[in-house]
Length: 377
Ligand code: NAD
Image 1 (cartoon, rainbow, N blue to C red):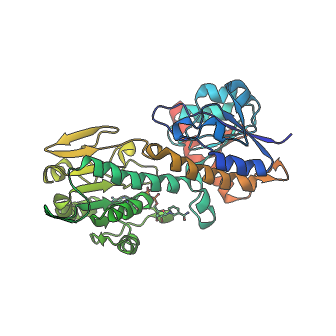
Image 2: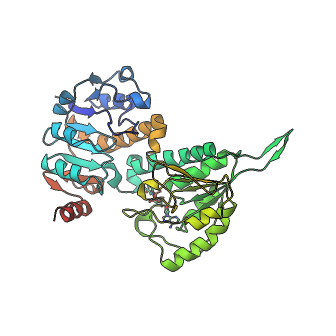
Image 3: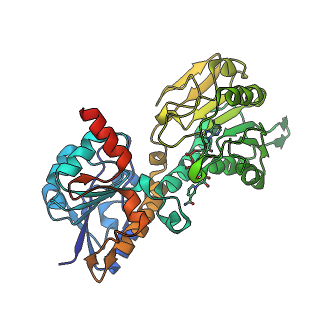
């Protein structure tokens, strides 16, 4: 019997991505893997059933889950879906390890081996599997387009018969994967761009994209290439300098995040009040509480003429390419597990051991286990 991979239709509202696109399904078929797709799974991402020519399309979820060795998902499957999976099934997806505790508990009880793509270590060898990066790049690009749509201004300088238009000024806060993509996109649209991050290493990256780096003289590199939280004094120093740049900006995109913690608050209401009427803030950190004090997750508000938008599920707004990139991340994660038609995860490999969430009835990811047990006591 070939290994059977199931592709369920995502069920959460606003989730338009699909975990496997037809091109990647064909590549799995070449590895002798049978792909079973729930009818309509790719519709919202514009991949109709007919495009999955190498796969079998099924309509009932009982046979989808009941026969699967592996389930590939974008979002955590519902509790009902987990109950339909066979014991020992491998589930791979963006499983929100710190948040979906009830689901993780159920995965443990049902003896599902689950891997959270968010936990794939950020080492060079695993770059091609890094779904946080691929989806952050999508979000960074889209954030600039959302801001451009909300702004009443051109981004580029224009010389027209009706006069010369000055380019828009954009400030991008947080120069990780999303921020750098936002800088590159705003530059392509012709804006004058300034970038800022607490990690000193980003200065060169920001400048290499043709943007100016806002230097605040606070270096806050943490572990694993991430930032650490700033001290109170550092926060004040940061705000004093950022205030001037933000007051002059037409567009501000914020992308700052700290692993496992709420997003740092960088733009207080007073800073928004000093901005020009018509200016736009797009806060990509809205899901984690926002980088702007006024951000309301999923909402677009107006404060003294400044628009503050905290979009949710941004990668899903660009579902064609977000799905394609995510599917390739999954393919690269899955391929080393398959040899000679057998599923053989290498339990010595740090990519496997760090990304496993539940296995053999145990929550293997310690911080999640501590949280689940803390919640239960
Ligand atoms: P992230 O989403 O956790 O954070 C986004 C950015 O916000 C980061 O650059 C961070 O420094 C910045 N930030 C945090 N607090 C801030 C504050 N108070 N003010 C301003 N900026 C603040 O990060 P990410 O984009 O996922 O990646 C961050 C790092 O990981 C980068 O160094 C990146 O190169 C590295 N990375 C490595 C790999 C790999 O080697 N496989 C893959 C992806 C990313």
